[in-house]
Image (cartoon, rainbow, N blue to C red; front, side, top):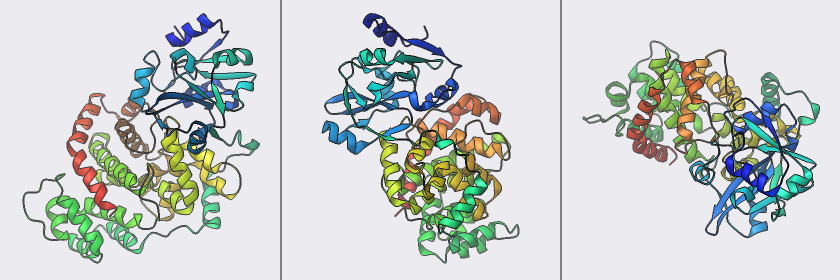
Length: 457
């Protein structure tokens, strides 16, 4: 059966004509749509929402994101997106992430974005990961009978107007020309230079950190945390370096803390500074745990995980109003890729459109300007690119795999699915290693959460 069972039964019972469009097995709806090889303007999708009154399905164009304020104005309800687990309970006959936008087949009320009902043709998920469905205009209107229509969504940038995509070199040039990019804070720069000196001592690092009372307190708190269970007294930063953490770990956490001071970003929200620190610390921990199995340097792996999302901070620093909107869209559209949301906020033309290349690429550019190590630059720059192959790909894939595992815990900014088996294979890891990592994450989660809370105080 190529269609989800309830969807196929609904079409047959209602006498609705449809055409199945087979594709190769896809890991996400984004990939399935790309496999069609057609314009995305005819593709529609479903977003599931809930409040105390129940569940509704919002149906909108694939290249759009829901406008939470418009939804509230239309319904008078404070609707929140369903989690992936809640969605799968409702759509048990569907593959995860492939929800058909036909609410009537699942006895759900539908909110339909304006204009869709007038389409001559639409394409959408069949509920499976290996086919799509095509309906003509008449069949669509039959399938959507009883839907409430209104303005629900923010439109995307379309097909980019036929313009060629910017190269990263062009983006870097324009960024430097158009905006005052924050320099690396002086303390962070001094720490970075110290780490490049192979003869640097623990005393020199401790003395550098102790110039800053706030950084000193945060490093001491880190060393005393239950993550390390050190039984003795830790009375100085030098104790933290020599007895507990080691030179590299102290240098890297201090570098991350000092570097974040370059950005003025709100604390709250799914993309705010509080969430950033939680995501970064978890990703750094998981990446470091993978490193010995992947022939990678543990310290560099930790730093890659810790700093891979700095582009998001830069976007928030340069464009506070747009960042606020991106934050709202992320919360309202959990199944959309972060890149698609960034396209919708920044890809509307004008100078800001260079930001639509994605926060990963922007972060890689900033790390290059700050002269961070090449693996850190690459991990930040391409962590949003599935299937990356090239320079420092083991560090990139470690960050990608860490993020994939963390998504299952609701940690991070990307909640769409990943090809975990392919990442494991690319890193030469056995599938059972995921279970080991998850056990370790469970063990340290309370300490990482506490540290994340303390780092933004």
